[in-house]
Amino acid sequence: MGRPSVRHKLVDAALDVFEAHGFNGASVQDLTDAAGVPKGSFYNHFDSKEKLALEALQAYIARNGIEVLHDEKLAPLERLRRHFRANWKTMKDRGYRSGCFLGSLSSEIADSHETSRAEFGRLFHLWSTAIASVIAEAQTQGAIPPTVDAKVLGRFVLHAWQGTLIRAKVVRGDQPYDDFVAMVFGTLLAPPAAAAPAQASKSALRRK
Image (cartoon, rainbow, N blue to C red; front, side, top):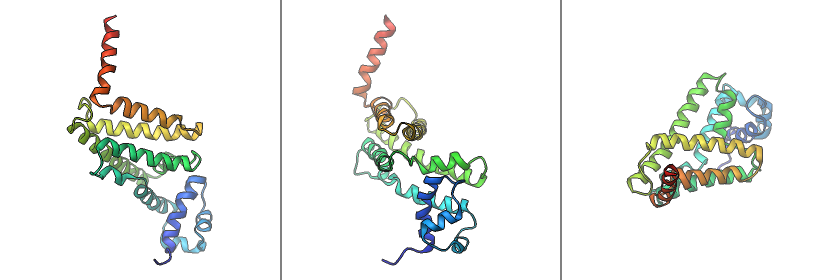
């Protein structure tokens, strides 16, 4: 295998540099130093930090375990569990500091970079749609009740996941993830047999 190109080195370095310093806090010098390439080579490959950030974002999406959502050898809910478990492992391995690169970058520059904002929206849509597709498959198979539209559930689960990662950066522990798993897989996406006792309990409370 050949050595990584300057462009690939910059993209790989960008993920760590932007995570550590933020988009606005990272300079071109920081990026080229981390990549081990001359500063002058940056503009041979990218017009701006924004262009590099967007390419690094594509690399991040490719690495965040989304492919498991399409693995039809696994049951739908198991795909979802593995997807979030893999993302959480990355978060935990980095000392609860990294979060979601898409979420972090979009919260920092969406207001000031319109082109990037549109791309963030597109990527969030693709991610939530992939989650929704798995949920719809689980509903069709009878693994979970079809009481809520799969697209709504897909968006909500992704919203909840982004909040989980933000909270974990504050508490530096597993509680946000444990709560996410309990609520998403124990309540929102619980199988009918698990949902029935909870519904019966609610009915009993209403009768009192």
